[in-house]
Image (tube, rainbow, N blue to C red):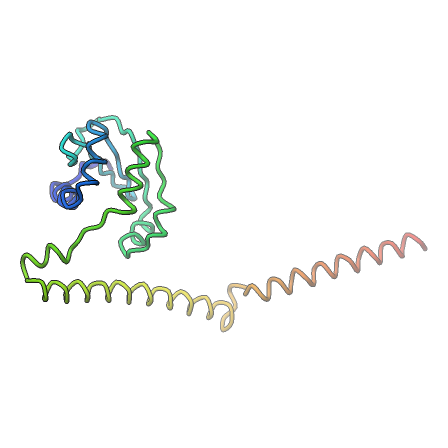
Length: 190
């Protein structure tokens, strides 16, 4: 599936870029260059403009950089896991890719600022604070769920061996191999 970025996505990206003049300058340096983001089966391609903003790439445009993000990785990024950026795959022009990686790592939407224009400063701060708390809670809940599943599968219903049990097994195999070797040596002497 190859789809051009929908208009709202382009507007959202440009809104975030406009809030950061340094980001606009980074994009402006690559005017005319196209970056394609492959998220699962969907492809969203953008072409940098001389203004520092982006527009959907025209069909058939050569992609100077290809960015690949698996659906699971996209979910991690959406949950705010910055370490997931290390697993993003990029290919193409090194200079453009470096700036794309920098923007992915450092460019953030200041939702609180945008909300303050509609709701006022105090309400925007509370809404943003609640959103951050919810995001943190979901991350912690997912971590606890994973830890609980791992404990269940290693202790209650052993489907996965614990690290301690694997190390003990490896040690016992080593001891058995040494004993067999000693037995072979004794047999050869007889």
